[in-house]
Image (cartoon, rainbow, N blue to C red):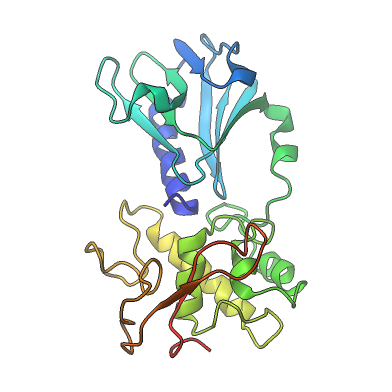
Length: 259
């Protein structure tokens, strides 16, 4: 599941392959940008901002969000793609590499000068050079009535956590996902753990919150509904909290380890 660490790693790989090179081909397979041609323009860099990815080419920024199914792949020219061509939404080719964005949830091209305004609603980036833990804590604590799992997933509070991380964080801190921020949640400790956990995973291809990278052993509660808790053996429960997009995300918890 793409989360901030996945996007960070994707941007790092794209930057290593494309930065400093000139595009020999660009193909954007979405109606709004189908006529845009960036061939002949220099790729400056690729970078992540929370769960958003930016590829800066010439005076333009290619902004994408992977959502649930998206991914960027790198291929050598002429090599076979691992996903079908009909899923491709963006193709950027240099003499040495072909970058293909498959099933991107968001794809748009904006002037680089407007890039900051596009993403200025995001909170501090957990994997960014400008990470500000105190500001993240302040943003979360200003809504004491919000369930902590919703607050952690809200990209306006801190950018980079997806559904897997927020479920795992609540378990690791022993907090029910439904507990309100103002109901005794140690927000600074939760934010600090968020930073440690996502940083530990940013260079791993297999994300783990348990410390075990073997398949089936990487998470404490996420996607483990009905299975025994790894700590106490109680059956892991699953549900959703409410009606908003954030609240409808699948939520997992141990009713004994989390209070």
